Length: 537
Ligand code: NA7
Image 1 (spheres, rainbow, N blue to C red):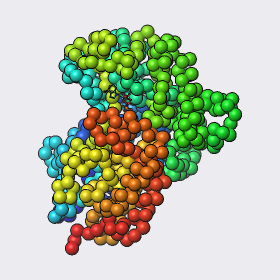
Image 2 (cartoon, helix red, strand yellow):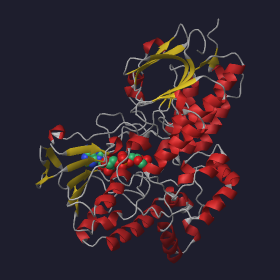
Image 3 (cartoon, rainbow, N blue to C red):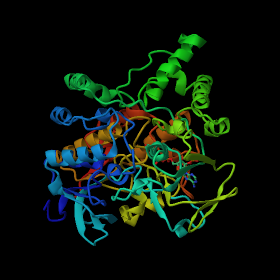
């Protein structure tokens, strides 16, 4: 019992990468803490996304936690980019290693969170009807946690197996000899296709918008590499904690104009062979700001696709025609384009032949009907706001967060909102910048936890960003959003993939630098510019 009004000091919602970290920090700081997790196990996206070949495309040791050198040393990742089972094991290991499991209640989906003004607590209720009263709520419910299903006529009439990549069954699906449809070619669909193409009878990839998929360039982590990582932990942690991207990739250190046209082609070849996100973070400085340079790189990538894919018509359909590299979140996957050379794989270009309906047997496009045993929806998520607006959150005066955000989210720091006192949502809308998600969320959790500790020490029990704080933050977002590389308005970063969702930029275009600048400004005064107050009058 935290006090006579609250059952618990800190209530964390979600036991994914961010929630586990928030719980660890809360317990470490001496707060009483409970986590409510909807799934029957911990891991968040790494619990739900268990489709074949689901894996990191950030390097394992840069995505994993870096708050403990002991943890870093004792968990040896097998690959530069680990697969889902290994990641889920890792997160379970962390929970046990730091004795967090006793704080976590799984199978506890939050269905309402009501601010009780009189008692200065949140009253949080689960689907089972359990209620907890918490002084502070940290909703680590994830940016990519609510699956988005396409709005297709007859979707529920299919009689075969149908699964979303983000809500994959625990019993492994047997693809051998099956006729399979994959709808969607983002990172999830692109990972799945090469993993099943050799065992299925047939697999059709339904592509709406082509993507600039590039090779992941994964590798096992050999002893020597592991030793180097361990020996250099402090330097690595410093880079991950301070670099704009939260990655280790060595910057190119030059602009495109520093190289001749021939040198640029050689450089692009090197980039093609580099790991994961290095294609963005280690590319020319002006790759993300100079359209001509970006188009030149796109032409290089288009040539790669033409060389890889045997059928010229399929190759042309796979090449994005009006999309800069990085404007949509690019998949980094091995053997994606190569898969289309297998006799079992076909590409169905939905811009030419849209889906008309799904029926009991399969999918009908304007061109033909195809029968399937399995349909996979790799159609992404209700990004950023999906979980928060479905949780029945009501703040000051019963203000419903889903109503307040009907035109898109307004927030402060990507983790708090005016009218929602004592309610934090690290990793939420405007939380991530163009970089390594856990590193951004870690910054937010650290600031939240510092604030809670400060509040405890200085007699405050309320935190609510003022309207002015929120305006400063949102002005930054709106001013910089058009300059962001992720500014393709048709992407999920604008909410464009969800039918009826307001179009609003959902990342932090100012990155870590702006986040810290604005947070430091707020915490510079004793009461955080009026954000901190006491309910005791
Ligand atoms: P993404 O990246 O959002 O990709 C979803 C894919 O599904 C994308 O190709 C979409 O096409 C496609 N999609 C969505 N709705 C439809 C409909 N109605 N019809 C056809 N195709 C559709 O999700 P992922 O799961 O692949 O990746 C999510 C995150 O995981 C990613 O950001 C990384 O952080 C890792 P579109 O491009 O919208 O035309």
